[in-house]
Image: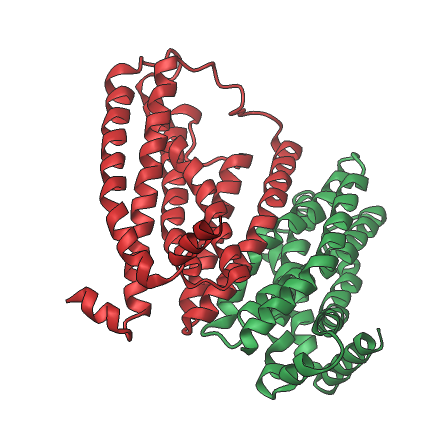
Length: 221
Length: 246
């Protein structure tokens, strides 16, 4: 457990020394969501209807933007090999790296989403559901994305390839995440959607670090 | 018992699998041709015209087998990929790589024939039906698998990375399918329901089964031909390949 926390601390410290990289993804999220009303038109009814989908797709893409950095720098300077050789299990260290990635890339999106939701005329309870759904969903995005990041480590055209691999796997998170807010607005209650999102998160917490570790070991061979 | 295990593992080596595949290919092609001709004959000349859909329904004789194959090939591909990862056999990875293009072709064919069928029947080339959407996502998964394998130069690493992706995909396919299904019912209700198709005439079923068998045989023959090409390419430095090509 100490090893996990140490990895989280190290990754956050490294990221805070180069703040611009983290902020880029956050600003990307803000800009993309603000572009949609400009492209579609300012009618509040329409914007309210499409808001959950837009915020979720933008969160998906913003997470994707940060994924190549997850292992790349450590792979280049050999830290990753030292991690694989270290006495603590690689799976634990990888889980720490994924957690740090979520704290740096996912959590800011969760905190910003209610503010951006105001642009789309969502009311307070819908904003609450949106934030809750993103709170459950963004760790899922980081976990699934980590598998793709490990598979494309040091591969030609890694960034685009990563999107091709990971985006189809993000579809369930998108459906239930955006669906939760839509169901709430429609008066159906978001409980079912949120439960399913949480169930997928639980599955991913268990399996994704394991699959990521296997993929990293292949990349390190 | 022991003897038979050794016998099977013999074909895990590219050198002994190559001639075996070569001997099997003509048989599968012949079977594909026989089943295909019989299936096409039944589906075009024997099966009656559908009361509701007219002649246009006959596209299902290609569409349904293609959809079945596209899903089944992904499972087989994941099976070979997992086997290759677990036992470290080289031919398994090559089989997975050889199956992917055929699977992608089947998924594309299924989407294309579905669109051609949908235009006269539903009045739209594309609807966001759960089955259509999951078939499209399956197509994306095939593309991702092939793109990953193509991007990695070292074939052994490509096999293993592809294997992990295929296994992750197989775990996700049911989740994706059900999420798309629920998403679909939430949004548009059951405007189009493929499940309550009218009970099919016996001859139609026969035609479809024969066509499905033809597609099976075609897929196996094609995968074996492709795996032979992959073996030659990867083992080109060995002596036996130099003799085999001569």
